[in-house]
Length: 168
Image 1 (cartoon, rainbow, N blue to C red):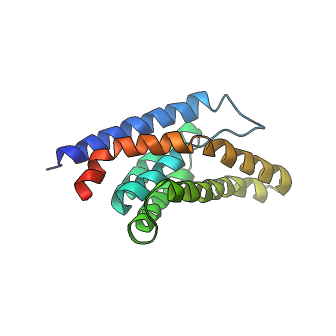
Image 2 (tube, one colour; image 1 turned 45 degrees about the vertical axis):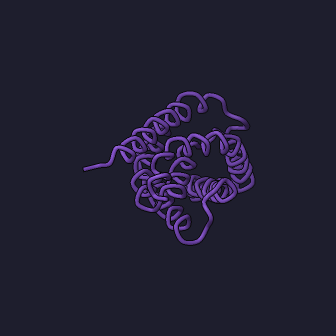
């Protein structure tokens, strides 16, 4: 049987995921800067893994990946697979390598967003699209997304407060 603090954490994470899904798909997709819209769900999957552990990160990364693919109108599984792996590996790093906190979250988020942008560019590079405009869009998307790093981190800390207390 699931403990009540785990249930509260899971419900808090799901509410945060639905909010990010709505913001990413309905709001920010219309507020583009130089053709780029921010990605919130990868930051959420990564942060959950870093703060709650590899198991939670992998499971929640799967949920965020499905929502991210749906918000982009993608019929592939690119973000489903990527965010599942991202959540798991950030959880592993948080458990064994990095100290959990905002600096680690910011660094991992920046690297994760750059990797997500590179994954989005692969099909376009295959079609012989010039690299400089793609790289510019990837950089703008990463910087635009990083504007939401602190609010998402604080939301994750709030959602996982009970979970973090129970693991100490």
